[in-house]
Length: 484
Ligand code: GLN
Image (cartoon, rainbow, N blue to C red; front, side, top):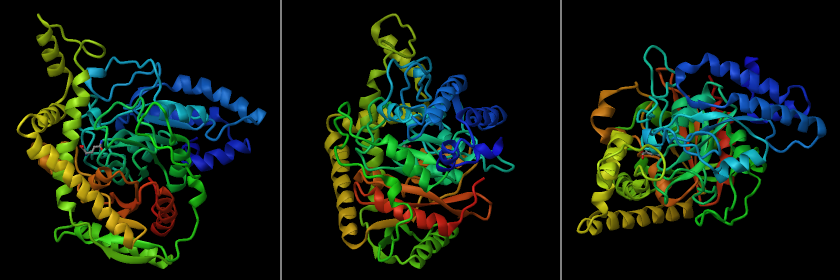
């Protein structure tokens, strides 16, 4: 049975089509794995019986040759995506009894293509965090952990860990400042954050609306293309979703990259960069060179302002987006003797420390007198960062960088938890991409001397996921990373 769970989505689909395996076999194999691997805390809600019932329909569809493009593929869904009739919590106490009456567009697209959902995946509370330790349901354990339990990365830690431990064939995730890419790197799996606007945000619980974007976390590059084909698309219910044509992302897998210009940004290589990560970066560049690409040095001069700008803009949007959780309309309600006290007690009890910190920072930077000093400045920096990328893409077609400056660390690491800035610093290579709205993928490149996965990031021009897929496929082959 366990070889069924090791199949990629592409691999499972081809065996399903020839009827070598059935969707019911597949769901049963995952059900067994899920039962045996509760220790990772990757899922917060399971709906395996539902998946099993739907697998029977899927089986029928294969028999009738009416199977759709992801028919019978068992997925995990980050608990940020509203799923009709299935509890959706954003891993917050304030929503821990919330059952949405509607389906997010991205998950609806997957259902329309025949995918099955095994359950909802653990994540940082409201997707705020980089280690999955802010979840109301406790941290996810990285399946690569040895003696000490390690973080799976965040905020999509459940998605990455579940894919790595083969608890689902692939997963949905979201990325506001790195939450698809960083956990993918930490768990040795592959994830892509598409261009802002590629996937609808309708029904995804909002963190920072101008940065949030959905994407898949998968076992490999080919599966990311398959999943993104289904997830992406214009949606009239999201005014920021794009009407641009969606190419068949799978068609770029295997295309050659001769003459492709791969940019390597100077500013991403500070003196203190972990030497192991720096050396994998060099070997990744060499792999692409051996495939006929040309490596060019580029500069992204405003990189050092990206983190401060992100940690002003994202909290500002948080303070506004999370105002709706007031105990009146849905979610947790803690009674008070008047309306103000109802708000205060509900929000005090319902939100965790990191979420409260961001609401406070956000409210501060938006308040009169500080708005110009912080928020407006951060928005100007955001434009300069976007301009840096525009200039860089005059010289290159895709950018290669590490995904994270660190390898997975221990759950409860005091350095990270005592000073939140240390955690924020881990987002150094990922946040610029969200500020500029660009697509970027993380894929595993190799293991550290501690035997832990490290990831490389490929950043593309806006709406040019195609070049990322083309390049990533060659990098994946060259790196020859062995999954868990
Ligand atoms: N780690 C970043 C943060 O805490 C990114 C989170 C995300 O992308 N959702 O904001």
